Length: 305
Image 1: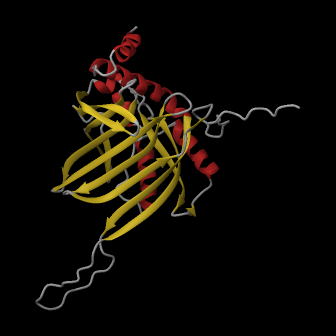
Image 2: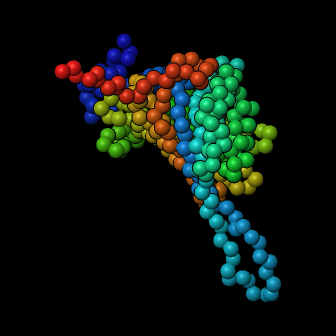
Image 3: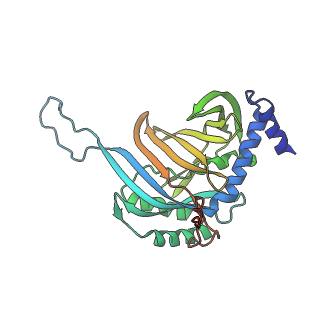
């Protein structure tokens, strides 16, 4: 009955923002997302742009300061991975985390998609923070820095349980493509469910805040923006991300892109652009070698003359 009331609010007056109805709608989509997203698989393409220190150090001789200091260099890397999500082992909240297996780096093949999917199937059975840390270490081995993870699943932060850890207010209207959208400002009260950062052997979470944009016609989440800031070793670390979602042919939301930026003391150092192919569903959560469901309608049979 509550769901019917929430939908009725949109039908009666779509021009009026009803915060309880909007939050009920978001929580509903987050629940559907949590139930179905672990049954999907896709290919993720990551383009990382990083400002690196100058490759060579040239000593200065003389009293006058040098006028031709080497400039930072822009490094661009492209990583393609098989991508899915799984629930953390022994997690009471059944939290979902991103799982990846790299198949190519800058166009160079690392492993076959079949081998990557088999490795993912092992991760789906019992993922934990150690497994995710090893995956991030693999990324570092391929020359990537400041890797963002779990932004694709940020919709889960707006579950009923997650909403209890937030302050939320309506902040106006905005356009997302062809859709008019309500803008809600949100802020996590505690670090629980926030961004996970690995520092050596330690892992820390930082509370997030940001905006979520909901389609005015039906309250469907279209975009989630998030950012967080903290001080580390005397420097201000700032991360921000924009996640765009689309309604898949399978009847639930999936991420289509993530743009993440990492800044230190206000200076942008890294930009990660993730793009996702259409998600395919599989029949069993513990086996990645499965019968994939078609994303398109099968062709009509030929007409008999």
